Image (cartoon, one colour):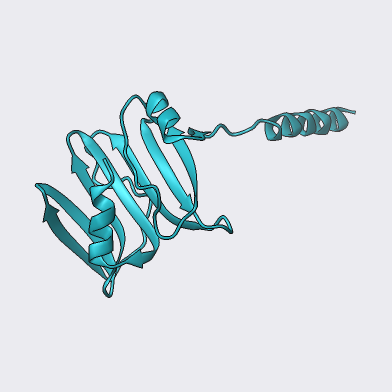
Length: 152
């Protein structure tokens, strides 16, 4: 009888423990304007990135805005993040890249992770904020620089 009661208690504890949902550290919004209000800081982004047509916008509890660009099949084409504070890397992309380059434009230092002549990840800091740009299939330098001018 004690064994049956013991197993019943264990079973009930397992069921109760499995029914709890894990809370996400972010919430999704439909517009960049709503993200700006929720995060408490401004953000400017390009309308399109890497031939994308759709966007998912997340606001993290830690004070970060993330914009994920998607193609018509809902595959990610790129991602932009902005966070309040001076962090070395907020990209969330920790893959190894063949080359890491540094570039300075308009007084801002950019770190670029590259494979051959394509740039995949760019991180930088400006005026108390940290930024990252990730392009799924990579882009050439001039295209990346054009995108960077639109991100604030």
